[in-house]
View (cartoon, rainbow, N blue to C red):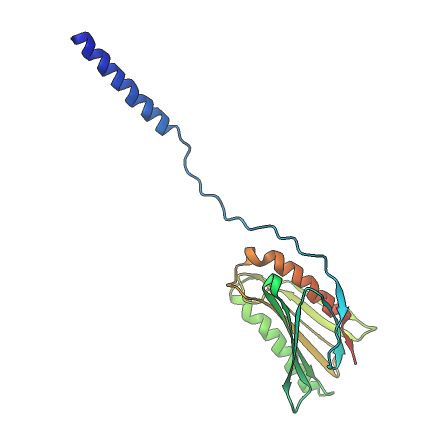
Length: 201
């Protein structure tokens, strides 16, 4: 009886110890970082725009909707939206005529710079790249706004006398820098291509 009892006791003890060892040998749970899909976008194919505005430029055929709006009937101001449904983003362009007025140029430059500066609160960094093409008389600045901001890229170009064009990139989603980065990088190349191909009329 004592022998039987001690055997049962030993068996229970081994089972309990075995379960305890198995449970305690598990590794600590370490949460995995969020992952985002690697997106491969098609190689850009550019065509010249056929819009009735005082300048031309090349746009990516991936921009399936190009909308033109005359901002004010009394001025030579235009809004052009280049919509990229596949990337859930839009490049908004605004053209204003300087009309040889230095005050207009200063005001337009200030407005363009203020738009970029509004993002400094949430931006991690704003690298600025000057652009110049003396042959085409196109001078400007490209600003990449890094961080969880509404507009991850902006630019302006001008000839300093007659023409002023600004642009900004927006996505149809809550700003999350890591998740929109592949699409933002792709569309920033399109913005730079627009700057490089602008020709004043």
